[in-house]
Length: 184
Image (cartoon, rainbow, N blue to C red; front, side, top):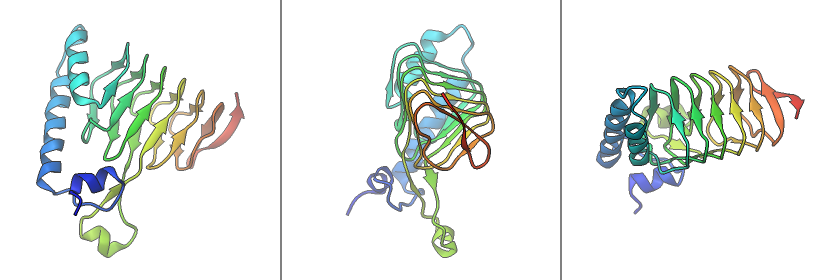
């Protein structure tokens, strides 16, 4: 029988109160607390913490504190990544950012979701769906990416947009739910 962690990573229903998962979330919170406590001039220390926290890290990345995530090891960022203040990544499944991605302040990326059935939800089970963000993407301030979405290369997600479906490459989306308003 697969572990709760294996089920989580596979996007199957899992129990988030599993001792291993609780310990891994605690470890991520300790790292993010350390990260969020660094000064603006502690770039080497920040990089060291992100190397420990994230699953993979490209070159020349900046994440402005405060930053929050569930596990960290499911977050993968490419080269020239920038996340402004107050970003949150709920990474029960893989979250992949391509090269030259920019996140405005308060961007939230969610892979975690819950059953629609009230009894299942009340029982505490949850599951996740991975999120992928291509190269050269800009996510405007307070944009939200919901579980399972992909944002194509070169696209822009307007401030405050709620992305509920895949975004093709080379477009601007805005609104709630986000819809294409311009081709680039």
